[in-house]
Image 1 (tube, rainbow, N blue to C red):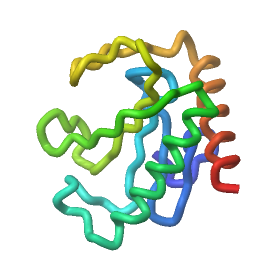
Image 2 (image 1 turned 60 degrees about the vertical axis):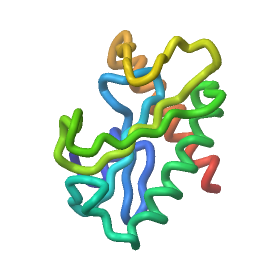
Image 3 (image 1 turned 135 degrees about the vertical axis):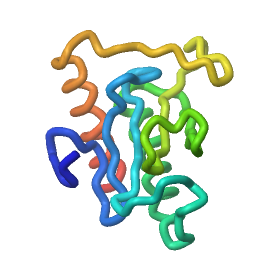
Amino acid sequence: MADDDPDVLVYRADQVVGFLDIRPVFHGHVLLVPRAHHETLDDVPAALAEPLQTATQITMRALRAAVGAHGAFVACNNVVSQSVPHLHWHVVPRTRGDGLRGFFWPRHAYADEAELQQVRARVRAAIVETTA
């Protein structure tokens, strides 16, 4: 992924970037990753905790406006089920009655590239609005 590709990223900061998961649990599902390589949460220096937390809070707030989320599920796989060996937070928009049970994550694919682009634009705009 290009560090600052405006066609991909929905969140950009000095230490953290965010983009839509291409196999989302629900539309608007964002992955937040540190720009510096850290394989697991255990590897993250304390100085990165605040930027990750800030990115998570901004993204959660933005998802309310972007996709009508009532809340969010935030998760970080650490080794087990970690398909990419680079630390990443899942910020999954939630609504009451959405059917998500525990850690069984049914995936809801975007209908096509146009739908993915529309959701990406809404999330990106909501993040800009949230940080303004």
